[in-house]
Image (cartoon, rainbow, N blue to C red; front, top):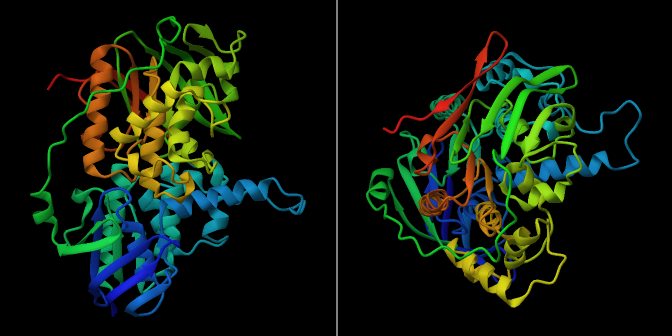
Length: 473
């Protein structure tokens, strides 16, 4: 049994986490919810015994079985650091493969989980080239294989395709039946499992009350949208269609990731890109953002120019706003929240140019829109994963760019902010300023105004690309 009474835990010198009373029986399940920065992840760390106790008491064994987006980013970051060291032996891989991280010899249970989560195709790939969803699956499988008595999962369903979410729910239900104890931090109330009767609500690093899923669902509030801040200046005119690929082929080692895709983003269109984890959606986006060098060897047209015709990455980035797991993983510069938003005007990771008063005022308004005005001076890396993602969304939108690319933008973001940002996206589309590409595994995340869908479907060991308009209904 785990119990916390009249407790205060150290987070930083200035910040603490407060829990008046919380108990968790062996074989029980607790869901933790709340807004971004409310302290959901911190409560999991307190239950696990990771936070120093300043007052009160905490009882129960400690646990290192915590899976979170922060841990996934840290593993990714460490892999890149290891790949850039001189200490790697000649016969060692620079970055461990998925198989290596799971163990060279895979037991029957491991193979069953790999099959259930659809990860078999990616076992030999280095961890750093896995998609965000594939990396998530890998860490979840690793945690489930260890069968810990207390399993703590921070946003476990985030980034997973529908089939993987269903597989994970089945595994968690089975674990509960076997006597394991679960604690889940969830931004989406509809992801609270039916076998998890108790929901802890966090606000400003205080556990305010224990409730249940149905009661909290009944308290949902409709968001009121403030006015969008203007773009600082008109961007140069761009040629349309903004994007076009003809018979696109992208491979990794000997594996074709994208095989023969032809697709055009016509004027006035806004697309959802859908399909299971590992289908190649993020690879396609890496071509469209100019980051994938295989774009040079294909018929790829970005903003009216064939890739490789003299345009620079900066020319491309000037016309687009981007949110993606890869960008989030790369944004490890510890600048302030305000500077992160300001960096969107300069298409940089970090802020290296002087920003005038006008830009600072506009960026401050964007901070207010995403509910982060009170964190303007906070260091980016000190913020929660969801708060970081909110800043990156604001960073992508500040220019009102002709092309807005959002790859799983709502990972770790609470419902209120999802509603609000969707409202802003709909406004941008309705005004005709921006065309939108959205990758999401949740249909309910689609803002009003999405007109078309590009669906990656499995077909005889490869992929078929079904594309067309969405029905008005």
